[in-house]
Amino acid sequence: MNADALLDRLIEALRCLPGVGPKSARRIAFHLLERDRAGGIHLAEVLAESMVRIKRCSRCRTLTEREVCALCTNPERDDGLLCIVEQPSDILAIEQATDYRGRYFVLGGRLSPLDGVGPEELGLDLLARRLHDEPIAELILAISPTVEGSATAHFIGERAAAQGIRVTRLAQGVPLGTELEYLDGGTLALAFSTRCTL
Image 1: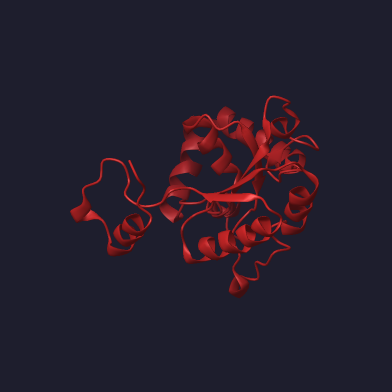
Image 2 (image 1 turned 135 degrees about the vertical axis):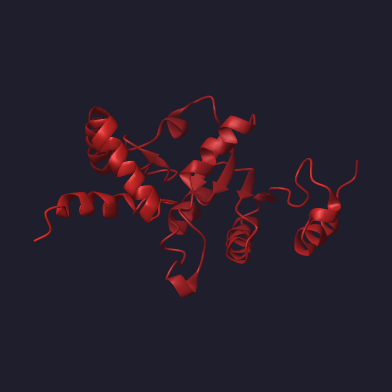
C-alpha cells in the first residue's frame, strides 16, 4: 500500500474542479497542507455542508438552501418578465451587470440529444407550467449562441410564442471595444444580419 495514498486521493479529488489539472491540484493540496490547514479544514466543512443543504429552487431551479429562493419570493420583482438562463452563475452575472428586475428560470444546460440531455433534464415541463399559469408578458432567452443553445432557444421560444408570450433574445455580435478585423466570420455575419436602427 502506498504510504502517501491519502495525499494522492486529495490531489485526485481536487481535479474534479473545473480548470484544475494535475499540476494545479498538487499545488492546491500542498498549499493547504503546508500553509493553510485551518483554511483547508474550513473549506472541507463548508463544502460538505453545501453538498448536503444546497439544492434547486422548486420554482426557478437556481441553487438555494430554501425550497423557494430569495429571488422568487421577492415581491419587488416583475412577474411579467421571465429570463431563461443556462446556469445559476448566469443569474449572478445578469444581476451584477444590469438593472433587470424580472424573474428567472435556470435550465441547467442546453438540449443535446447526443449527450442524453432532453427537455426533461432541463425542467421544461416546469417551465411550461409557469408559462401557462403565470402572467408572463415577455420571455427573455439569455442562452449561449452555440448550436445547442440556438436549438434550445428555438425550442423554448416556439412554445412560448404559441401561448401569445413575447419572446426576445439577448443581442449577439460585436463585443464592445473590439475591432472588426479581429472578429471571426461567424460573429461578424451574425452581427451584420441582426443589426439595429440607431
